[in-house]
Image 1: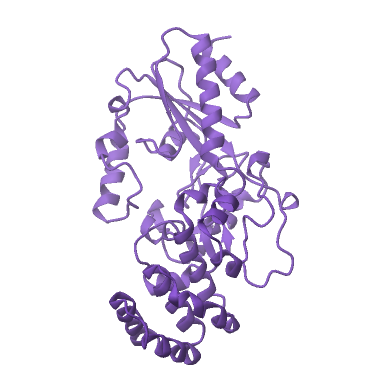
Image 2 (image 1 turned 180 degrees about the horizontal axis):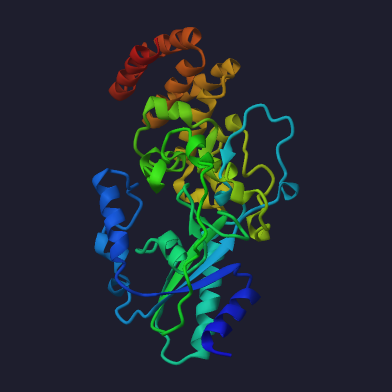
Amino acid sequence: MNIKEKIKEYAAKIDIDLIGFTKAENFTDLEEILRERESRDFLSGFEEKNMEKRINPYLTLEEAETIIVIGISYYVDAKDVEYIKNAEIYGNISRSSWGRDYHSVLKEKMKNLSAYIERETKNFRFKYFVDTGPLVDRYLAYKAGIGWYGKNNCIISKDYGSWIFISYIICNLKLEIDDIERTSCQSCNKCIKGCPTGALMENYQYNSKLCISYLTQTKEDIDYRLREKMGNSLYGCDICQLVCPYNLYVKSGQRDFIPHRDSHNPHLLELLKLSNREFKKKFGHTALGWRGNKIIKRNALIALGNSRRKEVVKDLKEYLDNPSIMIKKYTAWAIIRLDKKRGKEILDDHLKKEEEREVIKEIKKLYKFYL
């Protein structure tokens, strides 16, 4: 058995669902795509800033020969999930943030796999990355035969659909590379039609700054109309995956990603009350924990503003006195969005004591927009 087959066999033993191999080279075809996206201001800003490092693996590992790409399924069957029964007002968290933080799960597997390869080879030099590497992980997964590009810009596997996390090892081993998966999306366009903000477009075009997943993570102020389209999303968005026909019949993923109690659909009003310590206890083990209490509370206010439950306005009033200017501003938005008449009365009264000029300016802006 050659070293590649040994690596694949060991990967299966440690519950790596998918593995593929591609040549380390200058990805000049990718550069054109990235440059176009950059020129159209479609990049999120979370990517590697140095464009050359995104397309040239030699800038990360000078002696790079092969890139080993792995995929881990995170699909969780509904029977394994405990939902809040009769929950009146709850938020939605993307499946990618259910259960244990996938960064931790994948890093353990990559560390384990790399250690095995070191034992089986001589002078093994490598670097591995989980989500934060300089190269484009989905592009690498495509090149390594893990799956094909869907119109939702996710990599789709025949067995696991698009519910896969991707990570990679850049190494100095010369290994046989895998063929690209030639399957492609058909003409249903359900992901494009289903995207609330129009982030997905024809010809695999994608504006990441319109993606709800991006909006739930950005620290930038969110346009009112985009807030209205975010629904009850607290972190991430699965709409383009939930409507995808290739995701209808897929294998279940690993049990690490089964959520604990209501950590995937928390009650919004209860979420607003969490202290930083309570937030860390509830979400610190998940992928959304890194974004912090304040941003998730901002998202909860957006979700409440979209809930159409006028009765919660009384519960929101106290957050107009929050120390955070951001929380004050989004509370004002949620209140006026839920109930224009009662909301104006509450905000008029609040303006009599509000001292922050930014908040005063925001409330007046809300009046112009919604009244």
